[in-house]
Image (cartoon, rainbow, N blue to C red; front, side, top):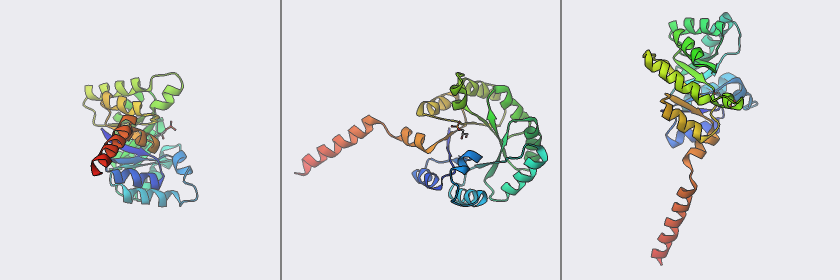
Length: 216
Ligand code: G3P
């Protein structure tokens, strides 16, 4: 499973990239708004694309096909690895068809049902993003949707990659991997949680203490 980071924060992206486990980045208007004052939308995306060579999702905000396509074409000029994030809706599906035909890769976002994912795939999307945390928030099993999408895509050998998004904790990452998702897009805090384990910390401390003993 590939690991993306779900942030527009340059420091977090640099740090995750330096660990050597980062395959891509996803941003959205909310994440970019948290970086207000640090540059324009375009400047921030350009910098992200210079740090990470894998796909970097940038979202459009228009709600009609024409607007989405024109925004997408501007965003695609930023760097070769930009992927256009398009919200799940009829106009979005139309835009995906047009953009993918022009070799501009799309990530259909705000997916909450397996059939929405199938529709995104039928429109030709390179990626689709089911939001697990937001489904869990309303007493639905977000990961059930991911499992169903993976089954459907396997049934029909659909090449659209499944990005598990709205990840809130390490168990979401584990379950995404067990479900066979292609990608998990993970907030920085959760990446840190994945690395750490209290028994690892205790183990390191014990090794160091024992090492000191033999130095005397
Ligand atoms: O990638 C989508 C993600 O940013 C949404 O996460 O926590 O706002 O549901 P959240």
